Length: 232
Image 1 (cartoon, helix red, strand yellow):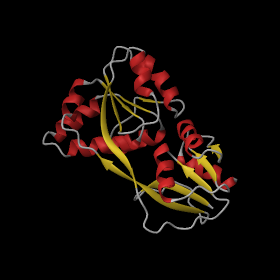
Image 2 (cartoon, one colour):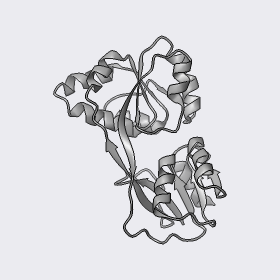
Image 3 (cartoon, one colour):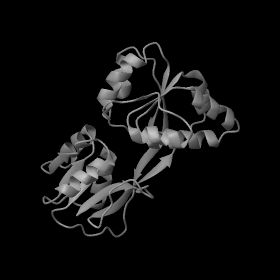
Image 4 (cartoon, one colour):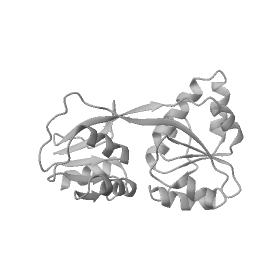
């Protein structure tokens, strides 16, 4: 059995969900409303996204403001630099395009590519409260005048009656926060195999799960990770 750790009310339409996949919604995504987001949008000249959640959270922020239409037009005029196709698709849903998509969906690789693309620019990084990558540090150390806005937070769900998980199962984690949420609800069994979507999540798993068997998805996206887990 594959247990896919995800947020509450996930969109699963694009994923290979079979009878051998069980969904465990252990994360609640909470949008943070930033009082000066309009000013930040006016002062920057480019936007950085490492998650589609940040794109939706920015849209929610702008829709809550009186000058919503003008600020959305401002957003449309700015180049969007994104880490993966999922973020590019989220932009497309909102009538926008990605200026650049990272060649590999890993934070450090994305940061290296942004160093060249953003020289002389004033980018705004729209992000979660807690992030695993060192993108801000890398960009600032290389002379990029980066600004940040925290637009959402991942909070763990504490289940009243956690289900009993099958021994020998694969547990699929998309982010370090998903591992933390899992451990709040379950005790790690030595028969489980941890499947991690990316390098940052694998690094967190090695720290939090100690002697667990940990594998990394061939590609850093949920679709590929699920297919990989189902083949094991």
